[in-house]
Each structure stands twice: as structure tokens, then as C-alpha cells.
Length: 319
Ligand code: ADP
Ligand code: MG
Image (cartoon, rainbow, N blue to C red; front, side, top):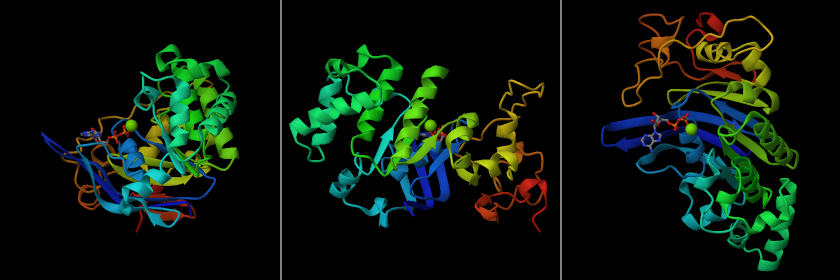
């Protein structure tokens, strides 16, 4: 097992109240897997992704849980040990590469710096920087460029090149293509596929479930800070067990059919005061009074590999 996340809860202590960004989230990832996390904006995908690296931004706090990476709890490590893991064994890329690139320094400087932190010599780092740019299909002269001189897609290639530097065991990619055109999006996804082919596990985050289908091994669905379903791509697409997953799939437009696109009625809840019982019950077509609004469904294995947190998984009564 590469990664085991157990009962992870992250709260944001804001002036207007405590936002329960993620609550009791548990899942595993195997070496070499591509797992995609989907869910509407605000469902807690980024919160969990950051917590896995112990990088929750203020005013957020990890209030409970464990993140076991190769047998060690990331959340209990000293900062030196964490620094050693980050950027080397686990790397992260973001929707906006500008958040991780320094606007005042050249691409080359930043790539070399990222390697020197982990003990690579100047000469070796320079050599590798050139190779890495080639790997992501950027000409070598981009080393001299500043981030603003590159397009959004090229900047994302640079951040992937930096992420590739040490052949990480895990890449966390938080909506890395959301700001890009469809064609560019695809080429970035291809680069992640290349990383996977070289042994990196991919933890991919997107609000767009259609992006998950082609390349992932498994899909994890989040709703209102909870992990509500996880399974293989086939299980999720062919046999969604949670009504929210089904709604997400029905909301994807299908170019070839006349099937109407069904938006999910209602809105995601305010996570300062999430609904009682199942957090999806106010929007759920299956919700049963006295049960779904009272009792929180646990994430249970309904079939091999396929877990869901619903009192009526697949539309069928549990008992
Ligand atoms: P997603 O990535 O799925 O869009 P997030 O993890 O960003 O969702 O957000 C989960 C919840 O936590 C949301 O209610 C969001 O408003 C809240 N949240 C995220 N970041 C912060 C922050 N820095 N301060 C306060 N609340 C936050
Ligand atoms: Mg996000």
C-alpha cells in the first residue's frame, strides 16, 4: 500500500464560523494507481489533497486522522523529514502554476533550485533541467524565460517538469487542466500518463467526471466534505451506488445522444452547518424521512472494491 488515509478531518476556523472542509475521509491508494477525486466545487477535494501533504492553508487545521505514506504517518513527521518527502517522493501541481512558480525568477533557476534542495549538484541539475524540459516538449531556451513569458499550458508543463525531477512515487494534481483549452488539456493529461507509465501513482482532482473516465483506475466521489463513493471506473460509471454519483454522471453532456443533461437540483450545503444525517439528503431523490436526515451512512464495501456511503446504495434498501 502506498497511501492510507484514515478518518481525516480538516476544519477552517474562519471569522464567520468553523467550515468543516473534510470530515472522516478514509481511502487507500496502491502503488502505480491513478485515482481521480471528483465532486462539485467546495466538496473538499483540494482540502484532502493538501492534507495528504500536510499543507493545509491557514485558517485550516487538520483536526484528526492519519496519512500513512509508505508506512509513515505524514501528519506526525518532523518538518525536516517532511521536506525530504515533499518535492521528491510526493509532488503536487495546481490549477494555476503561478501559485508554485516564482514570477521574478527564470524557469531554469527554479528548476535547478528545486533539485538542489534535495542535494543535486549545480551541473547535474542544469543537465537534468534540459532533459526534463525536453520530456514535457518545451524547447531548451525556455530555461531563460520568466513564467509570464509562457502560456498557461507551457507553465503547467514547467510545473510537471519540476514534479518529474525525482520520479516521485506520488503526484497530486489538483485541477491541473481546469484553466486550459481542451486540446492543451489533453496534452497535459498525456504527460501525467507518461509519469504513471514510469511508476508514479497519480492522485488526480477534478470537478469534471468526464476527465476521470479515460485514464483513471479508480474514481473517488466527494460531496460536502465527505467521501461518498469509491470504486473502479467501470463500477462508478456502469453501476453508481450513490445517488450523488449518479447525478454527477447524468450531468455530463453526451455529444452523440439526445439524452437531456440533468443538472443536480439544489446547491451544495454551507459547510459551517452541514445537513444532519446524510449530507446529501436535502437534494436526494431517495431520501427517507427519519433515516437519511437522522443517521449518517457509513462508507461500506457493497461489492469488491466498491464502497458507498448511502442507506440505499444503488437505489435499493440496505437492510
Ligand atoms: P474543492 O476543492 O472540492 O472545490 P475545497 O477543499 O476547496 O473544495 O473546499 C471545501 C470547503 O472548505 C468549502 O466549503 C470551502 O469554502 C472551504 N474552504 C476551503 N479553503 C478555505 C479557506 N482557506 N478558508 C476557509 N474555508 C475554506
Ligand atoms: Mg479545489
